[in-house]
Length: 259
Image (spheres, rainbow, N blue to C red):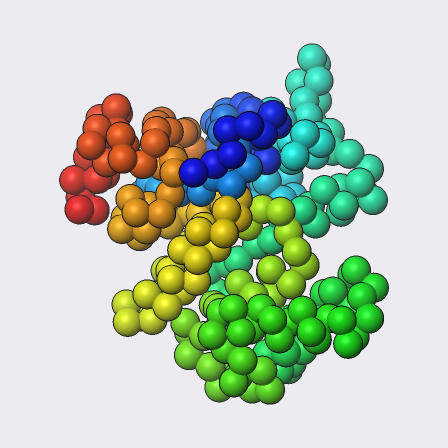
């Protein structure tokens, strides 16, 4: 369970708004994530789930509201409705607290598995190569892929690629892991190995925000389930309570369809 003694939420998003042209994609989304908490965000396609996740680590800019990470403001909106971000150096430092795993892996095809893992620690964190390799090898063992360290991504299965992507994100030692539908591009038989890795992270009390269609994962692993539809967060309840009664008609209809 999340650490109830921690005073500040790891993620504190308030009234987050986002437009793409005239389309309002996020309509004032508010969500807090506590230290060690696993939050699953579910909902129909096009509901704004992935956009919300990308707004948290500045892959998308917000048009209103605020985002605070571990007590540090990333973006806020003033009384006149002007949204502004912290200076670039501070922005990069705060965003470095978060690791991101995407739907389509985003591995560098010209680098081996090991090289994919050590690239950012060496270039961004200025880590010594030997130390980066040692960290990478530990994480490859963690995700069960030590034997693939010298392979190129093209020689891996989809499930293996996603586990490498998780290890690569962990190599930067983030405090928070964001997952954007990490199994949706995988064949069903490969989904289980990725979800097992994510369960292990949850068991280690990694703070995780997971956009997913995997209802089993949401029910069994998440502490909190948040339901989004049409750019709004309509329900957020403890997982057991949510699946018993989400407290929202649209969420209930979604569960009926998915289960």
